[in-house]
Amino acid sequence: MEALKIEGLRKTYEGGVEALKGVDLTVAEGDFFALLGANGAGKTTLINIVVGLVTPSGGTASVFGIDRAKDPDGAKALVGVVPQEFNFNIFETVREIVITQGGYYGMTRAAAAESADGLLKELGLWDKRDAPSRALSGGMKRRLMIARALVHSPKLLILDEPTAGVDVELRRGMWDFLRKLNGGGMTMLLTTHYLEEVEQLCNAMTIIQRGEVVKSGSVHGLLAEADGRRYRLTLSAAPTAEQAAAIGADEVKGAVAVVPALRDETLDALFARVRAAGLHVLDAAHAQNRVEELYLSTLSK
Image 1 (tube, rainbow, N blue to C red):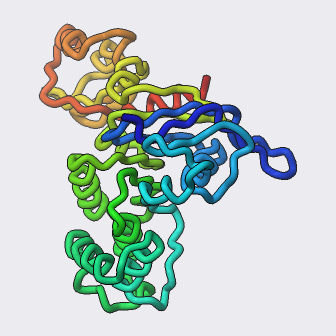
Image 2 (tube, rainbow, N blue to C red):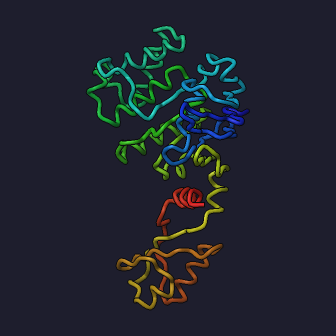
Image 3 (cartoon, rainbow, N blue to C red):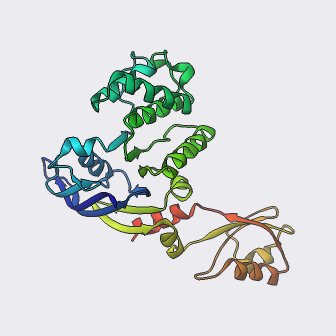
């Protein structure tokens, strides 16, 4: 089933700014889907249309078969949103923020409290449940946003830059939590500038540029098409200038060299090229996130 289906979606703001130019987009149920694009590409407008904050100029958006325009309340009940900016009452306690959100979806206070307590425990916020939200760290505020979005058990969770400003350890902890939700059947729509998140979490992606879709497909399939692969190779010895030139190294620091793969060159062929120069590869890793390579190459076309 399609969790989200967008057809011919257009939005022109007053003043003539055309934010969306007939976007078509499908997110399958159970997907962990990435929506990528530079600032101003139209991502936020698209999300705001899906959640009912913006009226489209044309086209349709359906959530699990429910047309957002024809049955806004029905569609709203199926969606949870983690916006980019903190937008809760800084004087309200953490627990009350989550419980109050449940009320907006018709939950009884008892049901909302039960859901809130479970989420706060799972997200490591239970000890802060009676603290005003202004007392939380940036990472805790991000987790509070997620708890609030999940209180009514949505089927589709929209995450707009969910780990912005979060340190590496907390970010990876949030990844694990989101993977668990997705593994349980919840559909995810993610926007992020941390492109490593896309490669780590997502199975499908779309890149939009100036209000139009420019690339769409499975993450695995799109990465397989990407050119510009560069590898950070740990070598058996520091290469001489002649050896570095022979293997085409872009950078050399001691025994570590960054080497671009030739077009359609396999990793085995690259290693053979290094051996031909009198060296051996002890370890290899991508020198640049592959999603970043794909993203930059797409936007440059």
